[in-house]
Image (cartoon, rainbow, N blue to C red; front, side):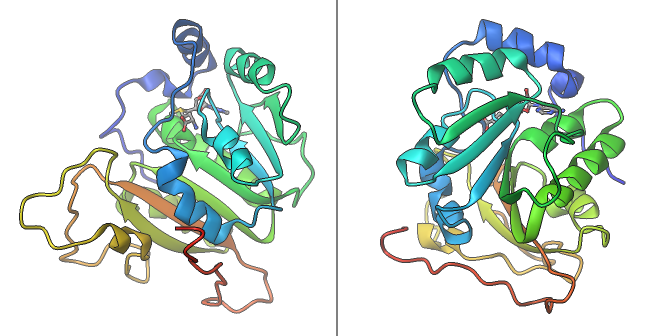
Length: 253
Ligand SMILES: C[S@@+](CC[C@H](N)C(=O)[O-])C[C@H]1O[C@@H](n2cnc3c(N)ncnc32)[C@H](O)[C@@H]1O
């Protein structure tokens, strides 16, 4: 299994004490990688608002709050940092759609099997991939995610990790996930002069090889793009390739 250290600034990203200290220092809110406004087309496309959602490694991001403003009815937020969880619980005590629990994503035994329609992960698998024992941590985390998803449920991973470092984990047959990939530029990325691609093209899945890798010759407009992996837990009896998505209506876009 792969451990990608290319974008790890710190080996402490897998460590609760590191995150506690960071959240004490940086009170307020911060969304890693992308904000909800940019992710909304994907979230609305794959996750009905009535879904029971688990946000893993919520930190102090505004994402869950924005989802509730957009109509999402039930979001359970977990994080290994008790500092982040206490802060967020206090901040959102009046929002009944949001719940918070301090929990390690590698052991979510508090929740019974098939508890959630959707698990959203923005930067948490990435943190584990930077920590010690990265492949073992990733496998424990993804095993738990798989256990908690209902058949047909979606694990939405927003990450800097390209398919060469993420597909060896996501593509393990034991999960039986059908993976669809999107690539979006960093916020604020300026297209090179003369580029012809339109913003709408980011909303189309990227063609991949059988192993889920980018096709040879695929060019990233932004070399530091973010990747969105939509992993659908296939019903054992369902046919692979049959991945229903919610239409991209003008309301969603
Ligand atoms: C890169 S931050 C992303 C925070 C938030 N999802 C966002 O998008 O801004 C990673 C988060 O994962 C949490 N985390 C790291 N290891 C974890 C673990 N084993 N279990 C649960 N949360 C963890 C950290 O406390 C931190 O809040």
